[in-house]
Image 1: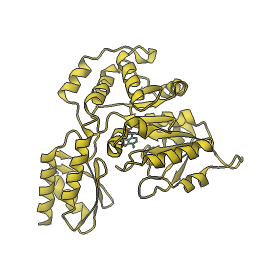
Image 2 (image 1 turned 120 degrees about the horizontal axis):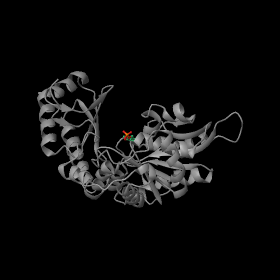
Image 3 (image 1 turned 135 degrees about the vertical axis):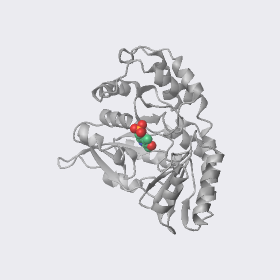
Image 4 (image 1 turned 60 degrees about the horizontal axis):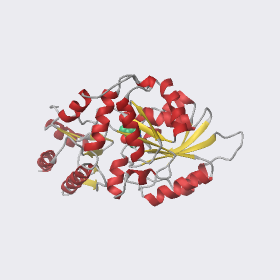
Length: 338
Ligand SMILES: *Cc1c(COP(=O)(O)O)cnc(C)c1O
C-alpha cells in the first residue's frame, strides 16, 4: 500500500494550517484547573453562546464530552435512551456502562437517522424496582452524515421533557447540520438541555470539544471532567485553535458539502456502486457489483483512502481535500472499472 495522498477517511484527519498554528503560538494561557486560562474561557463563552447555552466546558475529546454529559445527567443504575447507531452508544467503547454504571437503552434508528417517537415512548420505563430509571434521551445531529429535521427534534425533546427526561445532543457536527438545514446552530440545539460540539472534525482544530449547557449543570460537569482526567492546565494553546476554527472554518463547511455532492455524482456513474447521496460531507457507497476489498486495495495503491467495512465505504470531505482530490479519486475509480 502506498502513502495516502487523497485522504477521505474522516474529517478528523485535518491538520492545523499555518494561520491556526500562529494563533496557537500567540495564545494567552493560564492554569485552567484554577479557572485561569483566558483563551479557554473565551472559547467556552463563544461556543456556548453560538449553540444557545449559558455555559460551556472545554474537554479533550468528543467521547469525553458525551461521557461527562451522561455522568452529569444520570447516576448509577439510571439509563439513557439512544439510537442503535448513535456514536455515544456504539462508538465510545461502552464508557457510560464501564465507568459510570449507566445502562444504555438503544433503539433502532429509522432510515433518516431519527428514532421513532413511539419507540422512545415505549422505552421509557415506569417507576418500578425491576427497571433502571430512565433519565435521558440522547440524540445526534448530524447522524451518519444526515441532518435531523428541526420538527423531529422539537417533537422528540418535547416528548422527553413531558416524561421527565433530560435531553442531550451529540452535536459533534452541529455546524454541518446547521448549514444543511439553513439555520443557525442554536436552532439545531433548541430543545436540548445540553449539547456537545467537536472542534476537531470538519472545523479543523487538532483537538478538543466543548460541552454546553446551563450554568449549574456545567458546574457539576467540572467534577466529572476531573474524575475522568480531563482537567487540563495551559490548554489555551489548543483552545486557541478552536477559537480560530470557529472564526474561519464554519461557513466554509458548505464547500465540503458541495464537494461531497460532486463526489457522489461522480461515483454514481458506475453501475457497480450504489451511492447514497451526500446530505452533508459524507458519501456512503455499497460496492455491490465488484469485490469491495479488491476495489479498496486498488484505490489504496493509488494513494486514495476512505473508511471501508463490510462491503460499505464511507468517503468524507473536509478542509484538507479539494476538487483535485475528488478528480484523482474519480479517475482511479474509472481505471478500476475500465
Ligand atoms: C467523533 C465523534 C464523537 C467523538 O469525538 P472524539 O473527539 O473522536 O472522541 C462523538 N460523536 C460523534 C457523532 C462523532 O462523530
